[in-house]
Length: 405
Image (cartoon, rainbow, N blue to C red; front, side, top):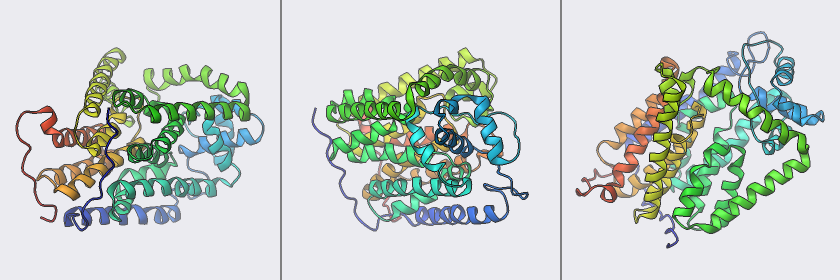
């Protein structure tokens, strides 16, 4: 198959005023929240100076165990929690379990060299940089920075100290570089092996599109990372990872120790509405199979590459049952590709209201406590399919609204 055409530069000055203004408001909200939250003791430390229990504590604690010479202990829930209690200075219900492959211990051990608060803020800032760069590259204009900083999940991701920025930047980097720098794209994809559930769709698509250089480079990168982590952290760390993964799956996908409303997959939606585990898996497999088939067909079609890239970014979120709100950062990549297309060809009349609804579903998740992120992903996926309309419908493409309207 032919190599995908490089992403062409969009015409400048075509961002609608409504989109620009909405993003500016959201950016101001995101940028002003954290200084205010820190001094109001809502972020990192509470009013007593104790650490607020949140996701980042498992990263720092795992890194601390590595520095103490016990990397395999990071996977032991009881030992991890004892370290976390010592770091925070207070107890909490449940567990912030460490379940990443040992290769992510490189990041955790680096962060554990610094005091907890410094590492927390540094991790958010350090992972934000490549995310901003990728969004700017995809959109093709400085507005990409604003769109990236305005995306509602950026607040959630930073608040809990999660890795959504890194995941989004690796997926976005893979998709942006694939047509012109396949080796670099493969390296980005290989690095994504730290969170393997988001790389499941990529091999199928790369095979369908005959992108063998990306495929092989990604495989080599992943193997080298695994080998390096084995040298650094020993066989015991991989044995612990394999040993604890079934327990983690049992706890979060069967027992629901994290409330079902926190996860943003169709599996979680079924469980949230009272359905059983088997019914949830039936719906999830139907969703995953449909997304895989449609995405593979799109990548074999002649539609513009930006739509192919957007479909793959959105598809990675739909095929996994284990998906929290902070992982919806990846949806920003799909939105960035749509904005690139809209700024070049004009936005359809319903697209900006639909993107506004996406932002609302992501912003107001705390009010509902339901998988509203799934709704946001489905809306973006529908916009992508609608843009690809002539490929899957026989009717003519709808008229476009000028971008400046």
